[in-house]
Amino acid sequence: MQFEKPQSKSDTSQGIHDALASKRPTVPEHLELREQDRIYFDNIIDSRAYDTWYASDVENAVTLAKAKADCDALQHILDVEGYVYEAPSGQLKPHPAEAILDRKIKQVAALSRALHVHATALLGRAEDTGNRTAAHRQHREAFDDGDDLLARPESD
Image 1 (cartoon, rainbow, N blue to C red):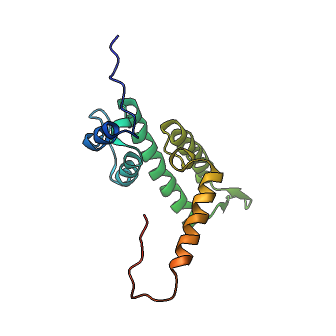
Image 2: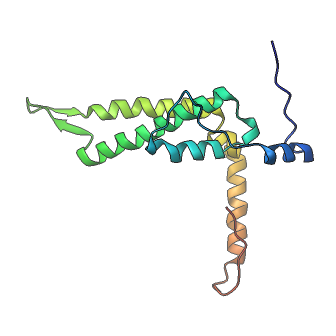
Image 3: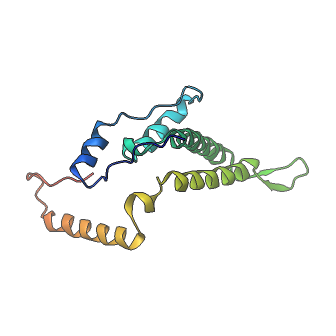
């Protein structure tokens, strides 16, 4: 059995160099993305350093992208048709798309956790995120003097 070379630590100069030198993962040849899946796939892949993606992770990223696109399509159906419909008997029934959407949302959540592309994996624990948000808000308020002529520090 052959093992892959251990990755460099991302907080070292070698680790940073390795991460920047890595090529962006692409869709495996045996899988296919629909046009509506592409934006989700790109966002998923860009959410982690390229050198951290294994082949099986990229395959799961394709599945996650498809599930997210399916959620959008199902949500659109529900936005247009509503969450309930009137059956021929006159009884109101839940729209079948709602149950499918619920299952797809659970699939998205599970795959996001498996790929470590969920909020906690990317931003840290809620307390840390809250502290960072509060600090960012204070920083913005400190520079908000009503003068739009001065350049402001920008953050992404």
